[in-house]
Image (cartoon, rainbow, N blue to C red; front, side, top):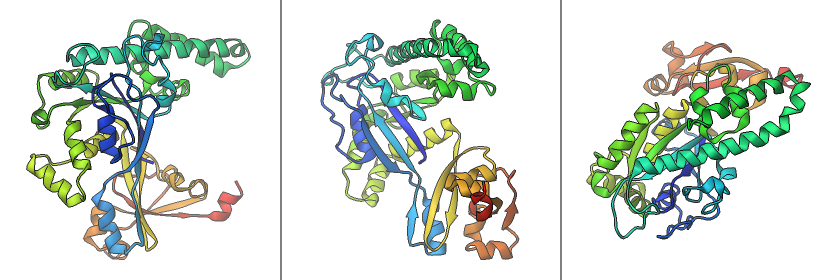
Length: 370
């Protein structure tokens, strides 16, 4: 799995329309009234990567296995959701376990599509979402605090967590997200608290068709906000993506994009931005049975990367026979790369690079003895 992405936003902003397009389904209802989406919609899509096809052509793989992304489309959030307005905070359980949150914002005017707040104002809309998530985190932390406070007297680790909870609550109570105090020393402990506002996030500006290339006055406001938060924003027209998803084949889709002056689809944009925000990269394994993509966190060491495939690979790790993607293609595979001196045997402390083609050597008996 690449990553799990939760899509949040106010009602009637095009979330479900975009979800349908991204996942090429009509599973999410997309009617013009608030709370159309009641239960969460989940969809898994393959990550398009031409490198997989090129590698497979060299080794004549029987199958290609790309990495995948799961999208979760949840009910629209309205002001007061954390206090029970609209559908209340029922949505929270569905996005607590995602890797990244996408704030989708309406950045177009259309009198035929009802705006729950009465008019188009993307900054106000994002502030409503942020406030509701902060309030939800405050409620969650207060509950967790009650549960662990008594146990903390006998457990030093829990005592640290109590102190951290109090620290985060101070931040949340002044309207700042938990993410604002995440650092190398507390990152893992904060992850255990499973807070919505500690997760990486980025924005999708749902714009009209005419604004998809250069944006508009609304999307530019979100661009500036994302920059100030060290995040990212992308412009997508849900209507265009819906039209793309209804085309019969990839060639027609590419021709449609080209006619609009677009170099990539909305799905490509979301994937690329998600990988950047989460610091994710891809390595490959290639052989006659399958060519496969594996997603990893940037900076991962070879032994840990082996564990993504199977824990036995990590425990019994011997070495990683590695060739860069470019060299693998240039020298027509592993043997050619080896003859040209481009095949390397790397140890457990090797930092894996994006595009590495790796064959892990491991000692099966060593892993079985662990």
